[in-house]
Length: 283
Image 1 (cartoon, rainbow, N blue to C red):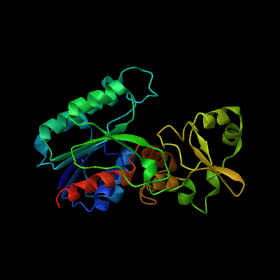
Image 2 (cartoon, rainbow, N blue to C red):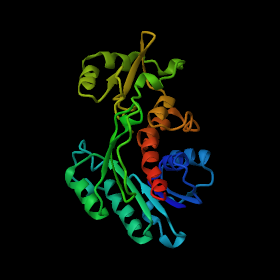
Image 3 (tube, rainbow, N blue to C red):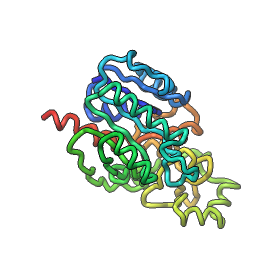
């Protein structure tokens, strides 16, 4: 199978294809973040990197069997206040996915995005010709992460709940640098931090982690746990586990970039669940 992954990030798609036992002949990836590409090259050195999705020419490819991608969500998100929706500068890159879908005509396609603005979601559904499947990652991991998945892979049902709790994936021995000090500790325990926890922008000792995001760590709106009487943030390995990415998959870059790309990535086992229906439909 030849695969084209748009907005590839750290190639969660390749991990999922392996776990779904789908043989890949060639994997093409379109990504522009240098540190995401570095992670992909470290784990999958044979990946053919194509750069900016806007510059992709279909004459470069053999027959593509599977087109996957998660187009940018910033303008579609219900948190966005710019009112641009699918026409926004970032979320408008969906139309590049649509262009390549029409030009390449793959046997299967899969697009992921947030549960966002209704008008944008309806537009995507109309243009792709399928209704999305809403799956919450909490069924397969310890993270609440509702996402829409548009695909022509038939027969997909909801995953069976594995009932995984945040406590189940925590590391037992954690470097001192992850324990809160000074400003952040004061913020978490203070009025502003507690308001964020009540509003579910942040969490403390939750049963399931809040959805990981790119902005969570820099803005302190992330998930905190108490360990041995002290409060700490989650480690990059715990982020990997929440996204069902292998431990230390992102360790070739600094923590700052690990948090970024994992917050921006896919929950791998959700993608595995969807892709397994390709083989089920061959039976």
